[in-house]
Image (cartoon, rainbow, N blue to C red; front, side, top):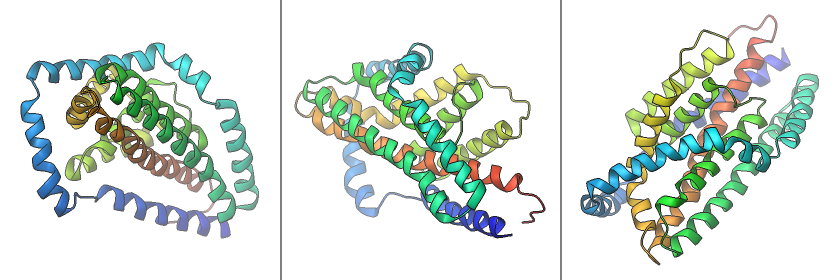
Length: 272
């Protein structure tokens, strides 16, 4: 009974954070001051550069998923994260208290913080050099690394096509706004549930990759364009860690939710 109550409270608390994230809107100051400036810059960006950026993100994802996986595996301390998860999960199963559930979160928070620092260095240095497009595979690699480490922290693997599609939809939901964000969140929820219940899933990973690439390209168009300009490029580079923070925050919510729901479903004689 104590286990049921703790899990239920944790899930309720997490869902409040989830709703807060999903309902975020731009402040009136941002809408009136920052948005018009962004729109002016976007109007001056050539259509050819837009299509080039779309292709760069698409090829970047292909590179990261197909050829970069082994490199990310070397950078991700997979064994250490899995051991930490096993120890924390065992303690939760045995004692079930907030202390051990909090310890489960520490690993994912630590990974997100480190990757924000990597993104800041990578974006800032390349921005100073006036490099915008070539850093896209590196930046996507940091995003994928961040989500992979968070997944491992809550006991989830990331090598299947279904989990890769789940990762891509996480990025889409985190990087969109208002109604579109909620629509992508529903895709994340549905796919996560299907994966965890071993339902039949038909995924066109290439199509999801293209969808995510176009969305990221459109969202980051101005930042990457600015990052391609010497000195001024530092401004674009600053955007990278902010994006890692946002995606990491959302990913932690969704993977922890899957973890808690899994625990609730395996708890005998539990009613909600």
